[in-house]
Length: 487
Ligand code: NDP
Image (cartoon, rainbow, N blue to C red):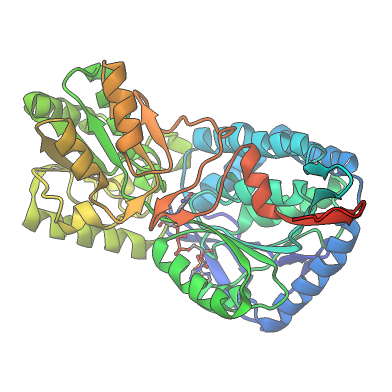
């Protein structure tokens, strides 16, 4: 039976606000190819209202005692965790991930991030420097102002919390433009934040397509900073827009991450890691390990066992709690199938290579787990981000060749190394050009650790204590104390 369509508005100044254009975007349930919700396809008038609200919100929030800010953000974290089931279900319906993934991302990722940055809200401090008899200098750290956040569809709250939580902790107001493909959880979260005591105007959510509302958003003069997570292609367009507004930017962009398996690795662990790295969430994860580099001496056995494991992968809609769900849109499925067709011309198909046979999976946007072997690093499937369940396998002879292949990419988001030798692991960690290196595991990087992407994967600090400085301006104050020379 089809679900009733949710009719959602934007969330501005603590209230639901209908769009000024009268147009709506249909938000799909990707597992069923059915309309799940509609949201306004907003325009300039809606954006101006959200920015005016954020200016009001900023006045109140930056003047709020950091301890009170911490308490409100902590309440948002606890409430999200209490209501994790409800948010996980909404996430699954809209983004196609399993309920299990939804629960983990609401409780342990988004909830935990708000909790973490609540703890930092009252710990922002500056430095002092005294030259006796001459000068006293000190630094003041102040909120950047109105911060604009653009979020991709694959983890609206899971990814959104990464920039929204530190922005709020630092005393900024926030305007979010979620993906028009997955705006539901962020809209509901903004309403919940007000119920937790966040003053109206501090967190606003506007909706609309990236090409319309998104483009207007990134050119809006009221913004003091843009915090973007999405593809490198869109990131470049946004950076071009900021050339005239000159705002601060943090860019978390695409990836084509190498996953390197040396012959001395624990093979069973590396096999399971390689499966999770590319097939979890159907490969729709920015740091997905989409390029598997395997040492030649174990290559044949590794690929054979990998293909056997891929054949065991469960695929299904959210209710199936499977490892692989649907892709987000039918257009994305077409794009992935095109990459598979190009892979068939440039490499050897090992398994998968199309839509799964199961009749129950014909309606949603499903693609079978696909592995290509013998992939030259020049092949399209080795160079471009596919954002789907397609793995390229390439073999290497020795350490130097592994690192050369791994770094031969425009991206630098993440990487992984599997080895039994501690020196190989740490030498690789130093040689890899990526913002994250996982050693003998994949994905479970502690988000308490700050990092920035390398190369075309973006710039700016994310996660952990250092990320909060992306949301603070730093002012140097110097006071003349006496007759000294100063310099
Ligand atoms: P897109 O770049 O297509 O979209 C990201 C966001 O940008 C969406 O909200 C989109 O809106 C908006 N947008 C699109 N065009 C414009 C524009 N011209 N101006 C302003 N905003 C615009 O990425 P996807 O949503 O498809 O997400 C997948 C991508 O995100 C992958 O490349 C992935 O690697 C990357 N990503 C990176 C992460 C990281 O931490 N580095 C984490 C997660 C994903 P709309 O959807 O309405 O078009």
